[in-house]
Picture 1: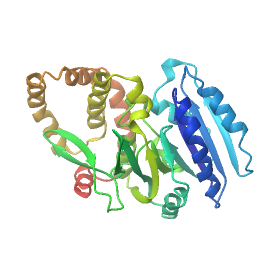
Picture 2: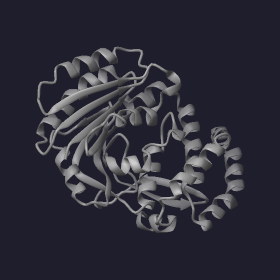
Picture 3: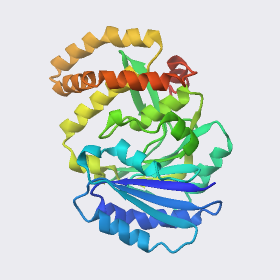
Picture 4: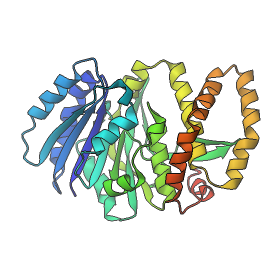
Length: 317
């Protein structure tokens, strides 16, 4: 299988210089097809463009090709758009998405790709050695529960091979199914929930999303563009907004829809008591997108064959 490694970047000059050589080393280890490394650059103001050009120029392996796409329009920026832009020029059978703050182990590719011999597999997530406040936390498998009208996602135990979602920063995806599912939904721009949304739609469409603990990547979350470029309050507003978008777009079980509506007043009161005004801003920003959410829901549900209840039952732990 041929591979396309897509790396979205925004002002990640230092991270690119550190991690691109390790990605190239991992690509050289793969012997079962050709590899292209696609670096998509949102309107960076540092010297990312020069770092990317220098990296591509120095690729000498005949089975590895470097590509880049540069976006100069701030209105077209955002994680989902940046990744989709890279995928649009990808020619590989399998997409591997790696954030610029991710450093893969040299042998991480083969265990990922092996799962795609199963035609029902849509995506496979890596084991994240997440660097958080100077400590390593191993994660990569996701679970969820329905609580008080909300879809609550969480870190799952890493001793199982299924996962509720494959991270957009360190996972592999079958490109034909990616195209069928229309990739990341730009409703979630600038960031958060787009990978959960895509994986959940894949699961509801009857595909498999797996977790591969042998494919290890080191993920320096604290150095990524989101936490270094945005204030915590702004991140929180977006996270709330996108949680509402996810529920309104993807949840189709009547019981869960009624539960969401029943608990909404309670959640509003709780937010008032806790002076969590970001919750209200997130809610109203989602309301402003209701027509777009409806259109996206109509497209997505045409492929759904599995209920929300069955999925949540499979990912309790």
